[in-house]
Length: 223
Image (cartoon, rainbow, N blue to C red; front, side, top):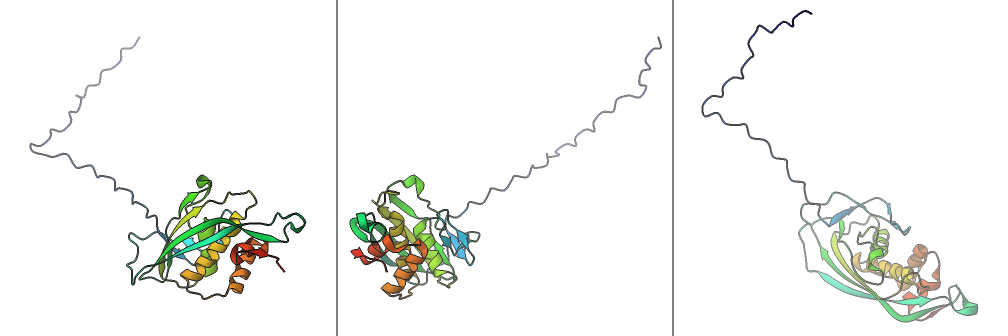
């Protein structure tokens, strides 16, 4: 058997480090930017999970909200629950009830033409099912849809207190739509009449049997 030939060349030694030579620094990865909860609303159309089109597509959030240009205004909107399950008047007659959705809103004029809406604060029935995203929350999505492409130039904070049970025939969605349209009227300083507001809430909800008594606060026979 032939003998394996040894490698005649000596193994190369790594070059010696020069005295005082320092190890090159390993570059540190940059920290990921923290997303701001408040996003400006740009023109466009988004659809909330509940099917309400929201005239809002959030553009990348600024590092800081625009500076205020004037004093804040506040409002509390109270909208009653309703029922249209009234025997022979089923889905024809509607009646307001003594259970109220409350929406507390603060509006601040800003150095911008955008409408900036903070995440919605919610307390009440089924909190895990109510989105905080203003583009998905039925109240604020309705407000954004109503204001459309208007150059509002305001920042809005919304807190909701809702004792109305969801999905129990007490008009919880109708109350939210009424609150959203009334909120849009206030934020946009639109000066809509009660009749105009009624037409808008019916257009969003699709039927007047719950929203009409919630808006008009009493008995309602839609025509």
